[in-house]
Image 1 (cartoon, rainbow, N blue to C red):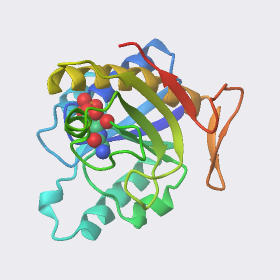
Image 2 (image 1 turned 180 degrees about the vertical axis):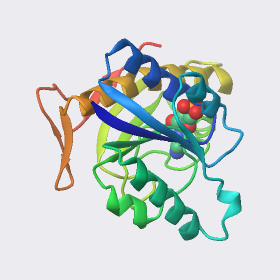
Image 3 (image 1 turned 90 degrees about the vertical axis):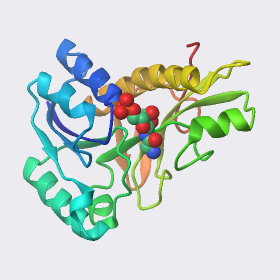
Image 4 (image 1 turned 45 degrees about the vertical axis):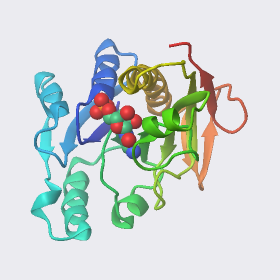
Amino acid sequence: MKRIVFLISGNGTNLQAIMDNCKTGDIKANIVSVISNNPDAFGLERAKSEGIETKVINHKDYKTRDLFDNDLFKYIEGVNPDLIVLAGFMRILTPKITDSYFGKIINIHPSLLPKYPGLDTHSKVIENKDSHHGVSIHYVSNELDAGPLIAQATIKTKDAETLDELIERVHATEHKIFSKVIKFICDDQIILDTGKVIFHDIKTNGVHIDEYFEI
Ligand code: GAR
């Protein structure tokens, strides 16, 4: 069983989806800790109610990003995870962490990267009247939202859809594709080998998993 650590900052619906899939045995992993930089993150309550260890490392208690990352690094080292999952973790990590755990940290991002790295992806999709939106899952590197791509899931935008409606559909998409990718990683069917994502026995459209969802 793989040992997974989650890093979150907010609601934790992705965390919930993965906890649920671990409980059914579909994902063969133990979530050993859920860390948040935000003491008020609801995801912490979700973890506690499943009896999972939680840890708050509040970035506001640190003068610099490096000092915050030093403590985060020390804590993660103590937990000794096989996989670190960034699920709505809204802090940029420094190379101290991204280099040390390269190939062991994944992130979910609400856009079809390389389109719209950073914040406010959903508003940008609406403003630009994009016909499609979606989700990307990638290994984390030193560059923001730009590490080796593992999977993307695309949805069609709808006319007159509100921001909240779009966000809800993106979330539902995330829960499906993230669960699938984490299951594959825990089954050693997806690995990062010298910077390249390798898929064992998984059909991919090209170099990454590429799915279309009617949600
Ligand atoms: C998710 O939509 C995730 O893609 C996004 O934060 C949300 C967290 O939702 N992450 C980022 O924007 C990172 N750049 P959740 O707390 O309900 O899982």
